[in-house]
Length: 290
Image (cartoon, rainbow, N blue to C red; front, side, top):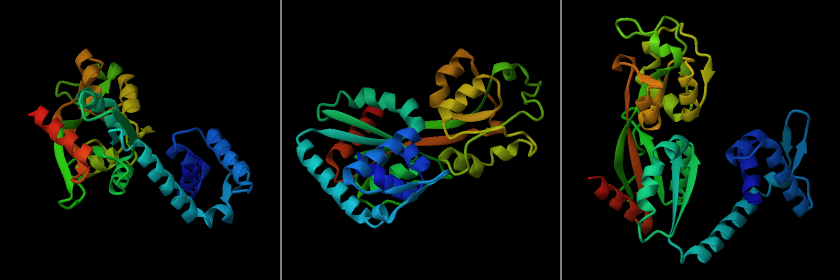
């Protein structure tokens, strides 16, 4: 929706950040803003050489844009109220590793007609949950990243256990010494420090277990991409075991000893108590898992 594009541009402050948030390329996002400008008949941004300047015509009307979006969402909700639609928000990694298993179960539930999946960073998922924009949140938590302090109006249940495991691939699989230790100066593939896995690994001290002078040639927030790079023998990295299970079983990835840091993860389901469909899904999933 073009209104959502405009609000994303205001909140991100740049075409690049807004395009990433809206999951489109920057040129495509720029064309969408141009479409909105043409429809309104007013210039919303000043396109400069290396940046864009958001004009007052957009900044001064953001409250009106938000109000209009809220009304449109309300209208859409009235039209779809007869459909038992389940809106799920989950982290990118969980969408690839855990969600397919959850989907196989809940797609058979007689009280669900349609499932809508949103993948975001964990902070964004929690934010959308607090604004009642999703029915069910599926997120990772550890003892170093405790669950948000919700009150009794929120239902939270641990559905599965997972873990971040240190793995290597390629020729590195055959380079361990007799003590199952990696060669000196083995490269470390890292997550950005502001990402959820980056925070978890920094808090656990897993990176510090290796020498401080180990090269860190790559940083990525996508665990699936990191797993593929590790399989090439580019270095050591930590990936969710649920995501790497098949590669581990085939021998493409080798799990290192716990001395390198193996971090337990909880897959947590969250819904508001008054959200009928989200609450019912959690209770049924938990009962089936027992």
